[in-house]
Length: 302
Image (cartoon, rainbow, N blue to C red):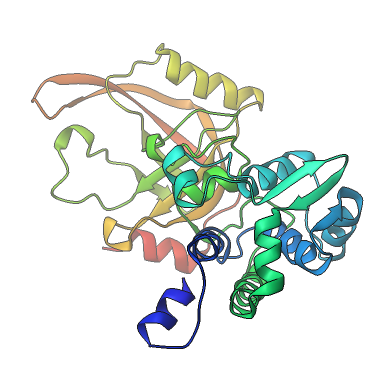
C-alpha cells in the first residue's frame, strides 16, 4: 500500500499495525474500482460516523447508476466482513469484520472508525484509496457484474460474480459453481506446458471459440453433461475470459457470455503427458457479441 511506499521514502507518517493491515486490504482488493459498492459504502460509513441504513445506501447506488440487486449486496458484505476470503487472507486482513449488517443498517468496525477519526495519516490514506477507487470505477459498467473488454483475475471473477467464497485457487481452466461456469483460456500455450494439458483452443472467427474440455472426458461424462444441459436450459451462465499468453500475467480479458453450439460437440482423443491416448470433448462456444476487432487481432495474431 501507499503507506509502505511513504515509509521507504522516509516520510513522517505513522500507522499502527492494524491500520496498515486495513489499508493493505483496501488497496489490494478495492482500489481497482471494478465494483463501486464496497468503495461507496465505506465512504458513506466514514462520513456518517459509522452507520448507514440499507435504504440510504441503495439510494446512493441508484444515484451513480449501480445495480442494487440482493446478490450483489450480499457479495459486497461478504467481502467487507471478510467471509469471502480463504483463511489465509482473512488472517492477512485482520480477521475482524470491517462492516457488519444489523437491523437493516450497516455498521463500521469501531476500531477502524476510531482510527479514522483520531489518526490524520490514516484518514488521509484511506480517503485517497477510496477516492482513487471511485474514480477508476467510472471505467466499468456498474450496471453489470463484469465489463466486456476489461481485464480480470480469477479472484476478481469470484468476487464480482457474487460467489460465496474465493475459489480462484481451484478454477483452473473452468469451474462449475453457483450456476456459472467461467472459462479461462490462454490462447498461445507456453512451450513448457506438458502436452497433456496443451489444449488447442482457438478462435474460428471473432464470435466463435473452439474449446477442449479437460481429459479424460467423454460426451456422457457428468461434467460435460452438466455444462451442455445447464447452458442449453439457460440455468448455467458461461462467461469467457481469454489472455494471449502467460507473459500477460494473471489478468484475462472478459469477452462476454457464451453459449455452446450443441451441433458442434465432438468426442475426440489426445495424448496425455504420459503418452497415453485419452478421450476429450470439443465444442464451439458462440459469444453473445463478437470480440472487438482490435482486441481480436491482439489475441490471435502470431
